[in-house]
Length: 75
View 1: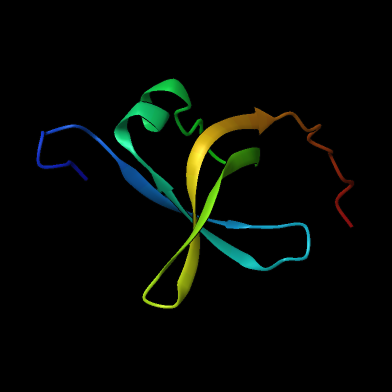
View 2 (view 1 turned 30 degrees about the vertical axis):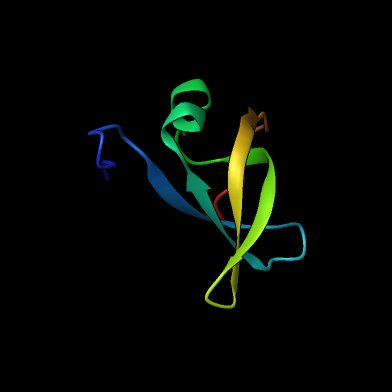
């Protein structure tokens, strides 16, 4: 999506450690500095805001966390 200034921004939906849904807003500066890098785990830092009774996080920083892919035997 683009802003009125024709800058790119995006919205995201993540699961937290309790498997609760979290909606995020990635404004242009945040998205340029901390772009989404595909599927995986992310550490998200930002400000919790409420719009129309719905909470979301305005992302300030976001880092993709590493994880090991595991191979399982075919059963």
